[in-house]
Image 1 (cartoon, helix red, strand yellow):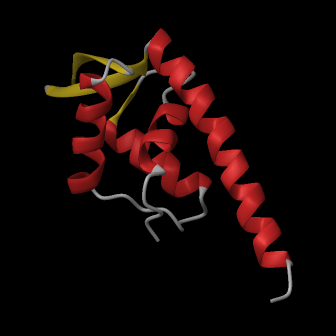
Image 2 (tube, rainbow, N blue to C red):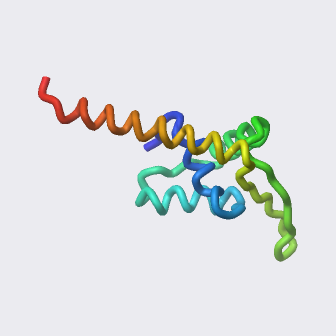
Length: 104
């Protein structure tokens, strides 16, 4: 399942406490959603790059066992944006839940 528009929010949440590389981000989202959300590289990396271009993430590289890993972490602007997006998401979830509870 790929709920349109949730990936940026999920990525920012994943890196809100510590920097992670792309594979770690994808695995954390999949694990935390009990396998329901499984974003592939073709979706994940363009979103990471867009968040970085918008100033919400910054990145750095490290070489580990001869392999270069690109890590992403939240910026202060990203933290503000994440908080706004969380509030908006919670409002949407509440509204949809209310609508589903009502009989038609």
